[in-house]
Image 1 (cartoon, helix red, strand yellow):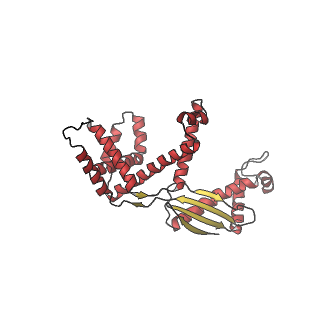
Image 2 (tube, helix red, strand yellow):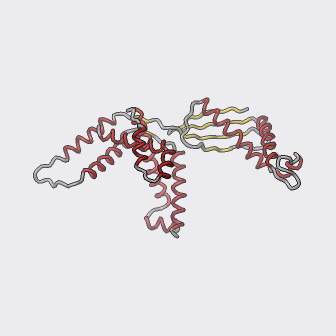
Image 3 (tube, helix red, strand yellow):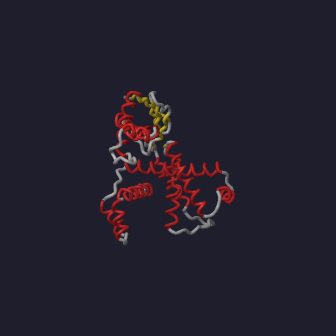
Length: 287
């Protein structure tokens, strides 16, 4: 039916090279043709009643190929992922290297998995940061004391801790994740620029950037965002940080609009993940 090889790559990326037998493909293409034939509508014939000879004239090879891929590829992919205990976190990148009639198919699939996270001695590093800040805040004669609100001080400390965490904790994000998010951001930016009646060149000149510089800036932001997401999740797992139902209920009760509240409750996992990340940040603040 098919054979495959697994090739582990850097940054928690896995390559799967698959060869699908031409004999299995021919069998599946016949099944795909039958499915398409049942859905075909041709003048003079009812749906599902088009004769095979007529259907062959109306169904193109590309249609049959597409239907075949749609059926067998998800099945093969799921089998391999389950057998190899892979844990993809985004949709795979699929390349059909050799999809020719009468030959075996060669397919390359790249998947991004949850990165390995080495927390190290992050607690000690954060404690040292807080101790150093406390010393720096001690007022001595002749030193100007900059007055900041408790909220401002707290926000500054959170930012410093998160930046320190990004620097100290080792985690590498798959290029597949970064590239997918970069494509989305650029596409959205182009749409926003067009809506504003501008061009990309005009926008780049206004920001004093080249396209390469913009991409690099986006890539850095994306990488840091995902690193922080995975780090906070790992800390929450290690410290057994959980979100209780009553905490979610409190969030939902603050949503006054009933329709919005029901919608939020149906998406409770999203709100739970946000609360869990916030609790992980609170844990870091209290070290």
